Amino acid sequence: MEMEIQITAGPIAENPPPLACSGAAGAWTEFRGLVRGEENGQPIGALEYEAYPEMAERELRRLLTELSAQYPCLSACVIHRVGVVPVGEAAIYVGIASAHRAEGFALLAAFMDRLKQDVPIWKRRALPLDLVGDDVRRLTPSSQKPEAPHVVPCRSVDEALADIRLRCAPLPPTRTPLAEAFGLVLRETVCAPDDLPAFDRSAVDGFAVRCDDSATEFRVVDSLRAGDWKPRALQPGEAVRIATGAALPGDGLQVVMQEDTQREGDLLRVLRRDTNLHVRFRGEDLRAGQALVHDGARLDAGALALLATVGHVAPLVSPRLRVLHLTTGDEIVPPNQVPRPGQVRDSNSILIRSLLRDWPCDVTHRHLPEDFETAWRVLDEGRAANADLLLVSGGASVGERDFTRALLERLGFEIVFGRIKARPGKPTIFGVNGHRVAFGLPGNPLAHFVCFHLDVATALGRLLGAAELPQFLPGKLAVELRDKPCPRETLWPARLEWTGFAPVLRPLRWRSSGDITCLAEANALIRVPAGCGVLGAEEEVEFLPTMRLTAGRTTRPDET
Ligand code: AMP
Ligand code: MG
Image 1 (cartoon, rainbow, N blue to C red):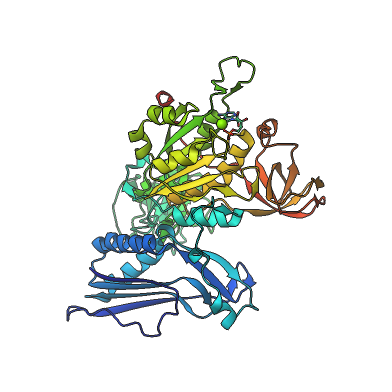
Image 2 (cartoon, rainbow, N blue to C red; image 1 turned 45 degrees about the vertical axis):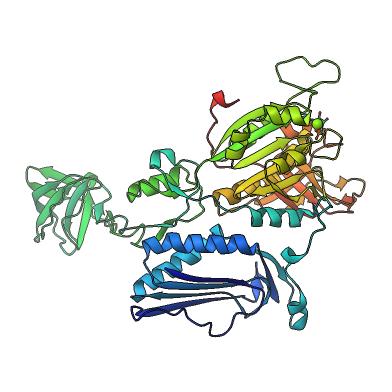
């Protein structure tokens, strides 16, 4: 299929030239996505889109190529606008030439479904209503801001998250048998191939009779069990014995519950007839073509049961991620060892391993010595190169022996940022190398906990193509939170409780990022704005939940 792809900072023309296509084209299908005047219920003036153009173009091409195998079309033209797009203007234009309209429609629908998931083009923010006209057009996408090469790039929490979402793209999907798909992320929207149920079936054990037959005595002419398929036209006065789940023999029938009848040989006496037909009608659960499970969903027990029901036995999913966790520091000893003065037990390995259990990944761990060159020799370069996600605990700061950044650079990672204006967790390094992603996490356990839920979980969600990424939610403080104002945002460990329907947050006690006791209780992080000293009881706050309700898989014990 011929393709023309443009990522542009300017407006999309009213009539983009369709691709030249041969006389084989019978249809030109067009889609133009406009910015709506509302976002999350609030009126807005514009949306700002960000993209890493080369990566986005490559992904768009890959996506179209993949989909065109399923929906053969002749050519496609995709124009995506980035930067500030005012309300009413087009953010995306897609044109598809195909032999018949059906393939064009199908390719377009599938493409738009996958676009948001797979392509690193990101809605960065909504701009308020009063920022319209020329002011809006003067704003440039922030991805175009040049970064001084000698400075360790520093980000606000929002900027760091936007960077992670942009720079982590979903890994190529693969098909997996249902039995191995638990916990994986679905990368296609699965629609019902048939109506569900596929035929009218009895909801009870009883006798099928005509709805329009008000007789009280019937002759039993047949018996149907689940699995039988015996269509017949029932005559007045006739009844058919029918089991729960068995297909009804025809239309216009009611099933009388066995408990409401008396039977003597072929003679059936109906004692009671209620208004309930006791039939599960064809398509009453779902109609053919309706979406069953959406792209980006985590396949839990219920979703897998649904896929099994419709015979979708090899769903397209993201592969399990290969994660390599490296701990650093000569003062660190295994938890089963008694530390000598000055030493500390390793708590980050089990913390990271346990947090990763919520994600479909296979974790390998290795401890590196403090000296860079020795560490480099110890590091199995091949294993590091194979990992989709590399996590390095400790050594992320600027101390003499902090080598995480150098290590990542030697492994070929581009350092996207090296610090976040957040407390705890300031020295956090984020790097990318092709589709591979690395984080250098500050060694303190509380900082680890925060950075995992904020940064690593966002990357995991993106790499896996999950529809839901970690996000801040609104809640209320249970009690006053008082602290010295900090120039950085604080992610304050808290206990999330539900009173009625509202989430309420109880701040936990902590003094430094080296604290660990609060981790046993923390299930949320309160977002305390920079410079804020006191937040009153009952005050509205944003928080990030740190517990998941979905199941994961344990990692293999031989991997430590
Ligand atoms: P670093 O980021 O290497 O400067 O480490 C900061 C602090 O975290 C130091 O007090 C380390 O001893 C501690 N730390 C580093 N790694 C671990 C670990 N795996 N388990 C527990 N504490 C650690
Ligand atoms: Mg260290």
